[in-house]
Amino acid sequence: MIPNAHSLSIINNPSRPKNEQAAHAERLGYYAQAKRLWEQVIVESKKDSLLRHYASIRRAFCESAIKNGYKRPELRL
Image 1 (cartoon, rainbow, N blue to C red):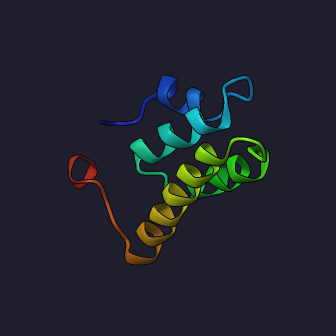
Image 2 (tube, rainbow, N blue to C red; image 1 turned 135 degrees about the horizontal axis):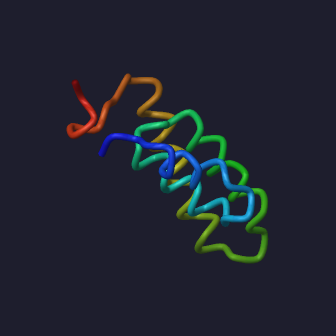
Image 3 (cartoon, rainbow, N blue to C red; image 1 turned 30 degrees about the vertical axis):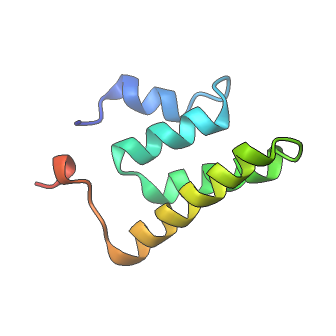
C-alpha cells in the first residue's frame, strides 16, 4: 500500500480515535508515529484494560520494528 494524501489525512486527523490513527500509521509503515499514538492510547484508556493491553502489545511491536529496521513486505522497494 503506497501512502497517499487520504491515507496520511487519516493519521493526522484529530477527530479520529487515537487507536484508529495508530493502526493506520502502523499499516502504512510509520512505526515511530504509530508507537507514539499507541502510547497515547495506553494513557487515555484507563478504564478499558483490554484496549490498554492491546495497545501495549502494538506499541512493543512498533518499538521492535523501529529498533530492527523492519519494513512491511509490500512496502519494500
